[in-house]
Each structure stands twice: as C-alpha cells, then as structure tokens.
Amino acid sequence: MTRARCRALAGVAVGIVLLAACSKASPNALEPKGPDARSIADVAWLMFAMATAVYVVVAGFIIVGALRGAKASRISDNAFIWVGGLFAPIAILAILAVVTVKTTDSLRTPDPNPLKIEATGFQYWWAVEYPDEKVTTANEIRVPAGRPVEIGLHSKDVIHSFWVPELAGKVDMVPGQRNVIRFTADKPGEYRGQCAEFCGLQHAKMAFLVVAEEPGDYERWVIRQQRPRSGPSSEREAAGEQVFMRSSCAGCHAVRGTEAQGTLGPDLSDFGSRRTIGAVAVPNTRGHLAGWIENSQSIKPGNLMPPVQLEPDELLNLIEYLEGLS
Image (cartoon, rainbow, N blue to C red):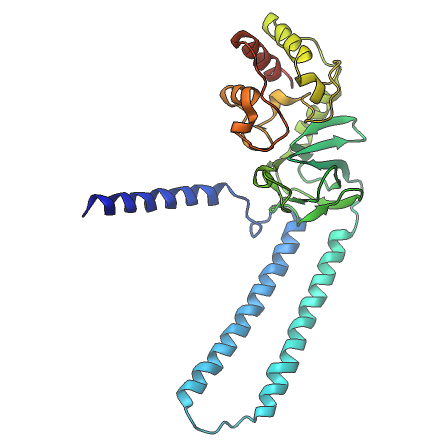
C-alpha cells in the first residue's frame, strides 16, 4: 500500500471518528425528552411512514409494469388517475392536516402555573431573565424537571430562532415582536439549544444550554441568585474585581451587587457556575477563559468583544474573580 493511500485512509478514519463524536454530542429531534418534542416527533414519524408507503406502492407499480411488458392491464387508466392522482393524495393530506392542526393547537395551549422566562437574542449570545424570581443570567436556562416552562422570545438586532431539538420546535425571535415557546423537560439533564436562523458571521456558534434540574436543586439555585452578593473571598479576587471595574469589562457587562451594569454583553453575575464561554463556544475552563479575555476573536470571530490587554498578574486576578462569581 502506498504512503499516499495510507494517509488518505487515515484521513477517512479520523473523519469517521469525528463524525461519530459529533453525532453523539449533537441533540436529536427524533429522541424527544419532553411531551412537546414528542408530539412533534410523532408527526414527523407519521409523515415518514406515509411517504415510505407511497414510495413502496409507486415502486411496486413500476416493477409490475416493467415485468408485465405490453400486456393490457385489467385496471383502466382513468381508475389509476382517479385513485392515484386524486383520492389517495386527498386522503393523505387530510390525515396530515388533521394531525398537524391538532398538534399545533396542543403546543399553543398554555399550561397551568408555568415557570415564566424571558429570553433575548443578540449577535451572538442569549440574555435570560426570570421576571418573577428577579434573576438574570445568560446563555444557560435553568429549569426544574417536570414543570411546564413558558419562554417569551425577543431579539435586539436581527431575526434569530430559538430551538431546543429534544424539548420543543423552532420559534423565531423577531425584533419588536414577542413570541412564546412552551415545553417541559421530562427529567434532569443538559439539552443543547441553537439559533436556527442565519443571523451573521457567528450564527453557528450561537448556542445555549437548557439545564433541567431536580425541583429542589433549581430552588436552591434561585435562592443563591437572589441572595445579596458577598464581597471577594480572597485578596486575589479583590484585586481581580478592581481590574474588572477599571477596565472595559464593567462598561459592557453587569455583575449583581456592583457598579458594573453594562448591557452590551452577557450578565456575569453567575459566570463561575456556567459550563461554557461565549454561548457554548468553548468549555468554561481557566485556559479558555484566559484566551477569551485576551482575544475572544481567536475563539469566536465576529463577536463584539474587543481584545483586553492586561499584565499577567492582572489577568490571573481577573480570572480568579470571574471564577468566584456564582
């Protein structure tokens, strides 16, 4: 075997492994984790089954016609036209219409006592507010498993689309218009969401996480967010807070209980407890955080955060401060 062929086969093997890894991590709309997504999946499977049946019948007629040759058919041409061209399509479309309207109506029906959340799409991140709880976060939506959720959808710039494949269908986020999406997560888990409407350079990296927790864990999270924020717990954190306040960070971001009240970027009040940075662009680790602060464009080109030039000690102190926000 030639060296070039070996390299080609190795490349194919690596590609297969990467695709397998991506497919394992990617959300699957055909594996619903809630009643709303399950209803949508049922309609999709019905459409697939009916399309398969039509394909089999048509293919069967083609095979029979090819094998029969020039022999006359006992079924008239008019019968084929009436049945195959009129009656069968009407029956199929009528069934799909009834099922689709019924499913859509059930998805639009408000649930009793839902958890109300407001989500706003920006280029390229998500603001999340809990109006009744007076809690604000970003890029992660915490919900109690088993409780209906109602999310009001907004956009501050262009048209976005809110989609959590395993929990619900797609709903557009239109500037100046409030749309609503409803869903329930059956059990605790992390469910990846995605902007499903092309919205600019970093549309592909405009994702978010729905984190479904046990009701008790969710209530404890809410209480932590409502509690007045305590000051830095170490000298390094205190120095990091000073770096945050005197740099451009405080002009764009907000931190609960401080003078930082910026709205151009995500609220960072619970940043230390978040799983990712940059709307699921990279995991929330110390190394990724340092790279994001120094030059976020190298991780997510086109986002609105400029590079922040800091001395090494200042950067370490700022990282310590941000990791302590929870």
